[in-house]
Length: 224
Ligand code: ADP
Image (tube, rainbow, N blue to C red; front, side, top):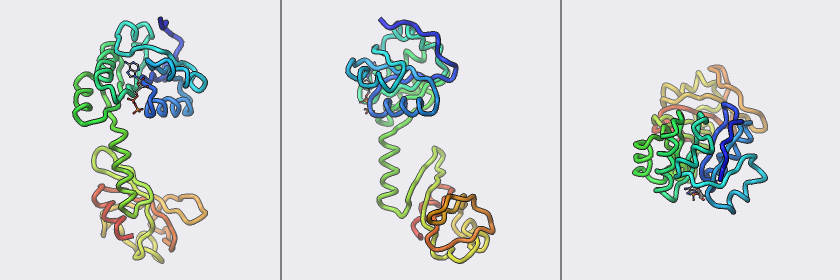
């Protein structure tokens, strides 16, 4: 039977479900310097993560009593990374919500799943497969080298400098007026990125970091 653990620091995070997504979240949190309590119901999964994560517990997260014993209510942030088993995902969010955790992140695999998670108390719902699928579609079909979209239809991309800007400063190129996008950074081959300034000169082979409304950023990348 899992025992309550009161020794976690206030910036600790509990990650429930150590599949591909949850495992990666837990590993990254540890790398970022956070203490992580990781929970999975399968013994072989717990065994697999025992070396790289300090606190890995085998438990059924749908059981509110067990979660209470694990001290889940003392965590400020919990990530529910169960996707495939929707019932387990929903019951886990419910148990975590009932424990009074103020910040619950949950992974959903469909929009309906996400709606239910919101209803039962998740504060943030993420769709890792859908988000990555969309991102790859942009990279495969477009001219973008990297693409990141935020919730509100705003995106940041890495793209090649368009021909029309080469040999000009950013002020002269007037990309904001013409395309409604803002150049944030410029990278010369073999050099680091520098912050873009009006007087930054654009040369052939430069890469640009460009931000703006997704549709405008997509249209801009298409001309490069
Ligand atoms: P991914 O697609 O990221 O690999 P999965 O949904 O397939 O995610 O994996 C979820 C993980 O959650 C699995 O390792 C599974 O053992 C674990 N899990 C599922 N149900 C429970 C539960 N009730 N309690 C604890 N862990 C669970």
